[in-house]
Length: 194
Image (cartoon, rainbow, N blue to C red):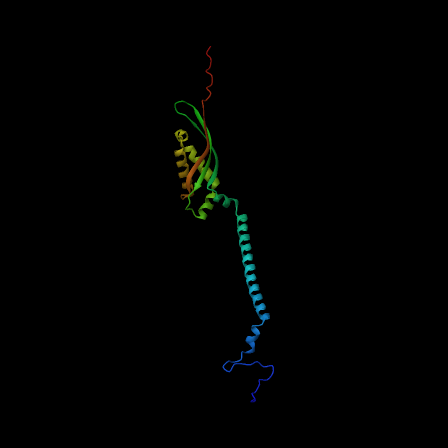
């Protein structure tokens, strides 16, 4: 048998057309390196998850803080109908000499296109607006109070409020608990003649 050179012991055989693989790629294929790579992936994804949860908690805390720190006036702006107060009036009738007294609660609905600063201005000036309503009521006639729909009363009050503010803030005036009573004045007894 002819003498064929044998590769030295401990070395791997390679095909004649194949290059031997570098040592670094062989080390990557070991089970230990696969495990450490998946641990990094898990650690990286868990950091993203923890970060997302932390950001959501911060956003929720900011929203709660904003709701708690709003002033009561800003909270009232959100309401659709803003109460302006209860008002009383008194008028005397022409022919029948009766006195008409009444009272009602007044609410306003603000215009939808108002800016935030205009809404805040309305809320700040409520005491002055209540005085403007009282002035408007003094100028109304008895017929304005006896109208079943109270349309003239509402129109006059709305115009007066918008004039007082200087811009069209009030879109609608609402009246509730309207009561009116008629009284005949007590006539003093006629003096007796002797």
